[in-house]
Length: 83
Image 1 (cartoon, one colour):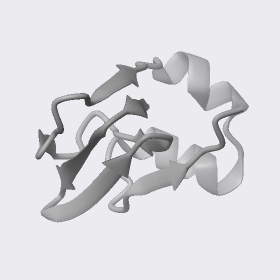
Image 2 (image 1 turned 30 degrees about the horizontal axis):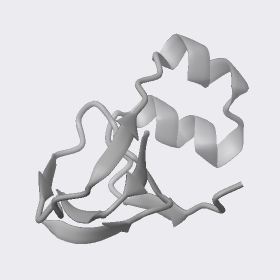
Image 3 (image 1 turned 180 degrees about the horizontal axis):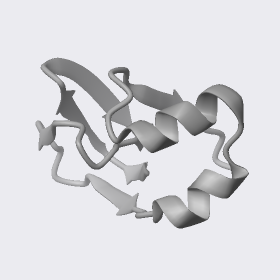
């Protein structure tokens, strides 16, 4: 999971450009092709890595399928509130 703190950038995820602004949260998976591009001079983000053993037991339904796939074939990116 990457959380953008400041600035802006974009990821190429499986050939699709995904814009990132402050507050963007994007989940990237182990086998999902991704490349960070076009970052502004003030761009910063947190990169958080979870082991499947931690996430798998709490994921349910569709979430469980996505977590286990390694590449869910979709882009999981959302804007989150500063709080």
